[in-house]
Image 1 (cartoon, rainbow, N blue to C red):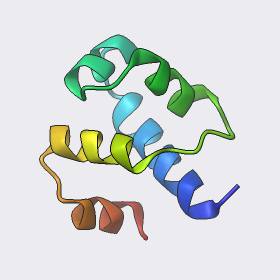
Image 2 (image 1 turned 180 degrees about the horizontal axis):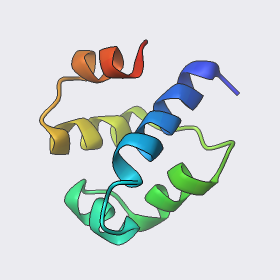
Image 3 (image 1 turned 30 degrees about the vertical axis):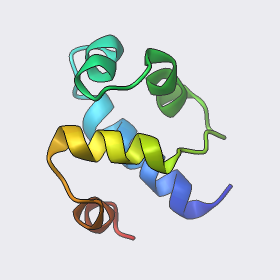
Length: 73
């Protein structure tokens, strides 16, 4: 798996999903399907889409460039 993809998925999982009150609330708050949140959290081979990254950034009020700096890319 691409290490950049893994960094992005791990960052979202560790920094944001793990601190949410529930997977369901994170999904609703970030305009994502709950299945997507479960895959980010549990699937080591999950390849995140740009659309998903954009939805998370929108909900967090982040520009994509700011997000990638946070992730370290």
